[in-house]
Structures are given as structure tokens and as C-alpha cells.
Image (cartoon, rainbow over all chains, first blue to last red; front, top):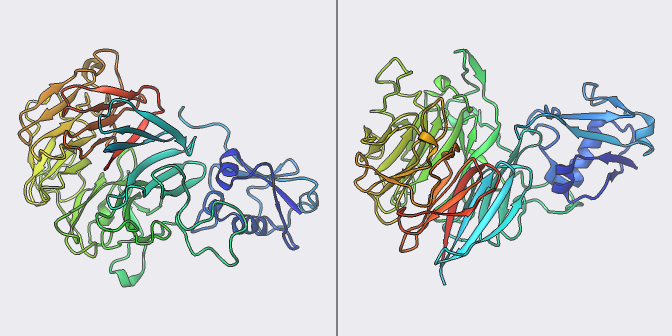
Length: 100
Length: 393
């Protein structure tokens, strides 16, 4: 099982408490994991990836094993520690910003 | 027993303020969608339990929310509120606003003018305004940024652009203002289901007489000092337009400077700023039962978005403009430097029409005597982005 850690607002939206656990067939790429996440939680569609382009939304980043993989190919297989569930895939919103 | 439900969209969530017909004792529910910008929320005139919400965030994009029980519970239309939906892809895409560039719709547009005069791709950012149909609870219109008009006929589950607006010809010349190029005003004509008025910042006002298939600019008579051509067909920064439902075709506009009036469905406009201390502002509305009684909140200038001398004033005209009187009883007399945004004023339809407005300082004020006096319903909400009110019988 792959673990996905979502930011606060998306956990709220999906009514999730804690990490999401997903079954994703090999090769477990970032794209495959996000597809599975959105299939399981359709209320999250468009909140992580742009609806039309499928591109990562500008103020979100993806991390795995303490590495920023946001700019890596979404079709590259995720690290083994993530695909085995030992480490989570982190989806993080920009920390700074906002006007109040 | 009658009552009112005031729907308040704020910078950090939605609030529902409720009272009986006396409008003295209020209950405050919320924040719903805490932490999200609620650009607009509005109830269906057909079913007061049906409320549509534009929920948006720079981080997570645009969501549409809907209530079918008067604001007690909410859901994204057509989507389950829990995981593990039925097999297959979801039939509903309530948050998808895809610009229609198909050749079948006439003149597909992919670019508009940018700040530097070059052409820029049309990019969806958020829903600025939701306007439920006057006759069908499942039909609702959405005004979006970058400016376009969308329509749903299934309660917000799916949206289709009325592409004739962007395709009518002047679209490539539309240019955003500093706040973005948003379609912020949608007025449905109760006497003609095929007539719709819209306004865009900063392209101007437009009208359709065939249900959205074709459109025409309706900006004749508007004067904008930053536009060299005095007869410019488009490019005017219209802040808001209001119309009394009992007198369709008579429109009132708060522009970036000037309060304007049209008596012929927007074909011609004339200035009615009259004796206002300043004719800059954002909000404007019309008394529900007195079509010649208007309300504006004068703001000092386009450089200083706050009331003159720090005194929050509503101005009322009982003559359809030109002659304005100051309303201040119950409003801050000093040190008040808030703004009232374009969609943050509304009226109810009780016999003694109530007037409501919200400020960027988080206050929501109500008047039960046509503006003679005001009382705050709440003081310390997040910055108010929109105010609408439902009249409950």
C-alpha cells in the first residue's frame, strides 16, 4: 500500500483523518498514484493537478524520501520506500504566502 | 413566519446569518469551508433550500459547493462526500470550467489582450459570481475569470460555456484590470428568459437577447478618462450593475468613477452621480419595492479604497440618481478605512425592504428602514467578499 500525506485543506475536503492508503499497481509512478487518489476521492480532482493540463498546481509540491520530486517526470517510478509504504508521498502546499 | 438568510462570502470561509422577519436577533453559522476564499454564494429564487457557492483558493483552485437544505450541509454537486464512489469515472465535473474553443460555437477564442498590449492565452482562474435561474433550481450561471460565462442545467454538476460571449468579436481586445479580468455581474431579466446582462472588469457591459448565443456590448454613453476614444465600445471598468426585478430594462451601474443609469436595457447610459461626494465605489443596489431608490457606498478614490475622512456612509437616491442623501445613523463616524466590494450589498424582499452590506473589515450591516438607520449583525468576520440575502416565507 502506498501512503499519501495530504495538506490540511485537502484532508478536510476528502474527510480524511491521517494518511491515505492506496493500492497502485507497479510501476507506481507519481501519475499513477495521483490517478488512484483522484479516483478514490473525486472531490480532490483539480485541487492537486490542473484540470485541463494535468500539471501540478503551482503552489503545491511533491516530496518523497526528503527529496523534492515536483520537477521530476510524473511517469518515473517512485522510490521503493514509497512504493512499499515505508515512507509517504507528501503533497505539500506552499507554506509562505497569502495576504493575511 | 417570514425570515431572512444572509449569505456572506469572506476571505476565509462562508457564513450564514439568519433572523426572523423582525431582523433584530441574528444567529451566525459558520465558517463553512474555513480557510477558503468564498467569492460568492447565492440562493435559488425557486427553492430557498438550494444555495450555490464559489469556493476558491490560490493553492487548490476552484470548487463549486451546493446545499439542498438551506445551508446546513454542503456537497460538491454530483460528487459523493465520502471515498470509494461507484465504479467508473464520475459523471459529474462540478469544478471543471473548460473554455469552449470548438469551431461549432462560431469564433473560438484562445487569447485576449494582456496588460502590455500583447495577446495572452485565456486561462481559467476562479468563479467570481453565481446566478441561479429565476425559474429552475437546477439551472445556474457562473461568471468566471478570465472572463467568460458558463451555464449548468444539472445543479452545478457540469458546466458548459456560453461561448457566444467571448466569440462575438471584441474578445481579443478585452484587457484585465489590476484585479484580474472577471465576469462579476450577471442579471437575468424576469420579463424575458432569453435576455441576460453581464459585466466584465475591465471590458464593460454586454447583453444577450437570445439566451446567450449572441451578444452585443452595451457601453454607449460610458466615459472613462483612461480611454482616449470617447466612443470606445469596450474597455470600460464596470464595477457592478443592479436592476429592480419589477422594472426590467432599467439598469444602474457603479463604474470606476461615475454612477450611471440606462432606461433602455443598456443601449444608452447617462451619468447620475449628481451630488455624491465622490462617485468612485464598487457596490450598488436597488430597493426591492421602490425602483427609483438606489444605494451606493462612495469610496474616496481609485487610489484610496476607503470612505472619505474615515466615515462609513451609504448614500441613497430616491429619484433614480442625481439627488443623493447621506445615510450614517449606526455606521462608524471615524477611523473607518474599510472597503465595500462589488458583490457585497444586497436587499431582501420583505415588505419593509432590508438593505445589507459587508465590509473588508469584516462587518456586516443591516437596515430595516430603507437605510435610515443601520445596525451591525457581526463585527469581526474575515474580509467580506460578497453578501446576498434570501427572503424566507
